[in-house]
Structure formats: structure tokens, C-alpha cells
Image (cartoon, rainbow, N blue to C red; front, side):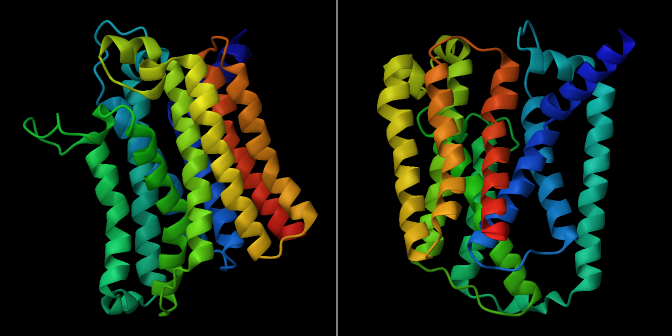
Length: 307
């Protein structure tokens, strides 16, 4: 019984503590970097990606009100404050050590020669990420992008696509003093990942339907209903992501095996979408739906390395 409780607590720490998001961010970054034919960055970069993604989501939940909540995730945060504080300390330490190691290892004077367009690309994603939660002041916190229900999935997807698609290239170019070149194929890959993450976010909104309805937050599922969300929004957006990938794959002369491996997460996504006609537990969303990100990263990486 004690072993089962320990295992359960560990699973909650990984998923409720948002470490799984950090793992998915690393997996998707590796996939996108290889698909754009860039060398993988060093371990300190990936440690920074893991810590940043995890801390971002911890910030989201630790600042939520837990008064009269029935959300098991928020209850976990409320009853595990010491664990969460320790997690934040360790993640901040990892981030600091990673950044310090990067500064020690590289001459990053290339950052001083970045063009205006490179600076705009570098800053737009953290700027949108900050606006998602709102500026940290009482007068500005009401002006956050997640209060716009239909826009919320696309804001999250835009931030994730920037993290996994754009920043590895920026980092490589800065540390190797080369110029960032964004072409049509990079944009296609960005769109593919953007659509994939956006669909996952819309799926997650299905879990929060009752709460969003009570708060008058017009998410897609609140606005058009469950069935129309799945058939008229999720499936078409998934199809757009598939079309973006197929165009990218053909342009990059991918083999059939490579294309088929990369299609597995999209097929799984459609299957999961249809399963959402029935009510699911929070762990279904955290493990199965979010797990599609990890599946995508693994399939894409295997396809690039072995085929």
C-alpha cells in the first residue's frame, strides 16, 4: 500500500508539478531542430528549455485561487506548497546554472550583431507569453489574453511553436556567429507545430467546460458545443497541420517511412478527439492528451535519425 501511495505521489508530482511539460518541450525541440536540419544544441540549452517550460506552468497554477475549488490539480498545489516551493527553487537553480554555463562556454558577442528582425523574432514569443497571464499588477492583470476564450489556444500554440521551432535556431546562430535565415520550409514547420499544439489546447478546454461556462469564458466548446468543437474545429485544424507537414515533407524529400512515422501523432490526435465525446478524468488529459506531444517528439526524432 505504501509503495502504491509513493508511486501515486510521484505521478502527481510529474504531471501536476508540470515536469511533464518540460519533458515534452525538450522532445519537441529535438524533433523540430532535426527536421530543420540544424545540429542539436548543447545540454545546457535543453536544461534551460526544460526549466523554463516547467516554471512557466508552475507560475500559472501557483497563482490560481484555491478557495472552494474542486480542481484536483489546484488542491494538490494547495496541499503541497513546500513541494512546489522546493521545485521552483531547484528549477531556478537549473536555469541559473544553465545560463551561467552557456555564458562561460560561449562568446555570445554575436547577440550584439543581431538584426532588427532577429530581435523582433526573439522578443515576440516571451512578450506574448507574458501577456497570456497579464502584467503583474492589480490594474493590468485583468487584461490578459487567456480571458479571450477563442484566442487562448492559439496564444499558447504560438508561444510553444516559438520555443521549439525558432529559439533553437536563434541560439545556434548566436553561439556560432551566423545569421538566422527563415525560409518557407521553416514557416511550414512552424505552422504544423502551431496547429498541433492549438488542437491540444482546444481539447483541454473541453475538460474545463463547466468552469469556463460559469465564468462566461467563450472557449470554442462553450460557444459552439462539444460535438461541433470536435467535428468543425479540431478535425479541420488537425487536417491543416497534416497538410502543412505533408507539404514540408515533400519539399524536404522525406521517405515514405519518415512521413508515416510523423503521421502517427496526428492519427492518434484524431482518435483521441473522437474519444472526448465521453467524459474523461483529469489524468486522461494530462497523460493521454499532453502525451501526444511526447509521442510527436519521439516519432519525429526517430524518423529523422533512423530513416
